[in-house]
Image 1: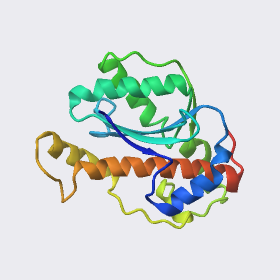
Image 2: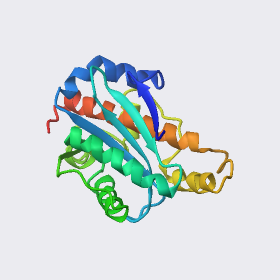
Image 3: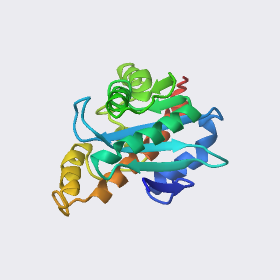
Length: 212
């Protein structure tokens, strides 16, 4: 009810996916959860409307986007995220220490959702990207996740994250679109973030020798 699934990493953004599939063994066998959330704003108290997730419940990785169709469904989404964190206690994010983790904690408390136990957390932005750019091991124009996409030969064409709050506000008020974009674009943006996050993790390990 709350999920948009793509098993086997799907068939979108073929260069990224080809790179991920060709090197997926580099992420190791340790249970881990790749996570990226979208919210109604930048404040810690703003609602979480979707959560991109990559995990391995069986032989293959699964990309999921959990979506709260209205503010009352946020608690169900948070419960599902916490269930996955419990099963996969190693968390991988991009700038998650500053953004995703604090907002999950705040919204769990506000929604009376039992939190999962403390987990290990690899934040690729803080633990790897900043140092790689500062030491000139990576020559990039910015430290955005999209820069890794460009290194892998792909220019993303989905919406900007800054458009998400406006699109969602229109959605919950039964208005069709915001600047010509719909809620489907939000879910696709979150989905592509997850493929990019996994590709960045593999790139950091394979090309830079990053370890966590």
